[in-house]
Length: 343
Image (spheres, one colour):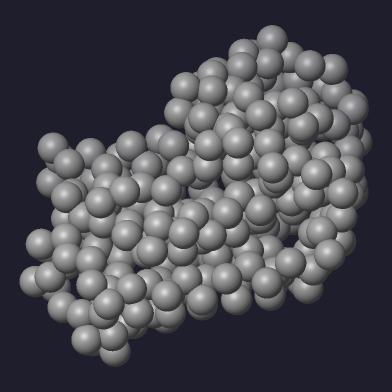
């Protein structure tokens, strides 16, 4: 990835205002409404005027179809999509579906084990290049990128957040067991935290303090997912247990490969669950700072992550032979806490 492309994606460079403006012009062309804008004397159009024009522009069949395809991708691969479809307004749902479709495409590339690592990196690099082009206003006949360009402009989402997601997929291609717990935090900074920040911007929250709280929750969710999926990832050669945590507990790789659950393993998992719960608690104030449908969705997500950790404890930390799952009875028991403020 070239340094020029990095500069284009960073908010302090073209990736914030001018790139949104150019992408917005392209979105307006998709809407058939680009003649509605008047240029400033220097020939530029402020991004805020472009975003407003995109929001007010009549729908265009090509863009509607692009969003429809993104929603279909989300429905096929994201089991909770029908649930969030019930909670979220259509415009916001479309934007998140476009982001999901983009991330899903990248995930498919990273997980394509039949391809050499170099080829997967090259394909992710091509997606990065395409992202840079469409966010700078280049036209695209790819429905995912067409919808994504519109979503970035409509909700003023920095393309750099999607670029960060691609960094995580590059890390997936070259997966190695983390040496330190902090390595997991670094990974989550790219794999999970950008998602929360994107969601906040789609719902028009732009606040540094809220971003930080969102990062805590998203990192907690990423770690909870790691612990939940240990029995699935281990046979595939993916180990997310930090080496230093294993050593502190007196556990070793040989016993891990033999799926040994002993007191050393439980001691290690207890400490990891404790640290993950701390992240959820640190991010909890965000639940009272958002409103409407986002509050419901965020509350459900926060409670779901905490529930996974609770189920791991109840299983006496045996996540090598069983994958804890949230069943209907668990979801029903969470409804009152989702509908009413969490203290």
